[in-house]
Image (cartoon, rainbow, N blue to C red; front, side):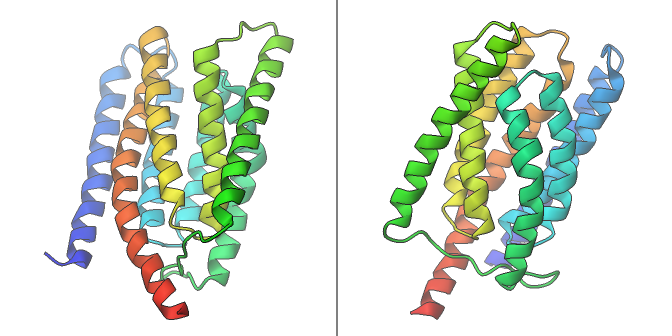
Length: 245
């Protein structure tokens, strides 16, 4: 099977597989869910999200259109779940970056038909992004502590450490995504793994948070898609490096 055909079937598996899992989970949990509208909203956002990540993995600019819908819905879910640093990230950063990413990908040749011209990190750019990660992580953890402490909420270290880790990886990965760097997918893998742990904890410790099953399924499929994206973007960025040589 050639690569083009493999990607077609893989994308179909991700989209259809996640859609079936998410819709089935929604239907099963709906009768006993006290806030049915939130479960349905979360389900719709998850479907928009999987469309976005599949398009992103394939270098399509339409990822930012579906992504915008997803981040708007997910922002509300984070607000409801009391995850302040992630909520601030989505409202103040992720939403604007959907527009910035769309603009920058257009400049790198992406449109409705053509893939973005991917590239790889070289030289001191590795150091630059490593330092960015360390600084943002420290700030995210401090913000989480300040918000919860001032609000009278208990500071849960394990939950806050995961929250800050996801926040930091999201920020740095999105900067790299806007620049069409292949290495973004290593950070998205970290995001997906930590998010799976986070929502699994939420689901097991908060019986009323039945809607948490949706983001748990979503990030599980994101993880599978991201691993395939590493393979695709290694090829796209290799083609770019050859062209620039």
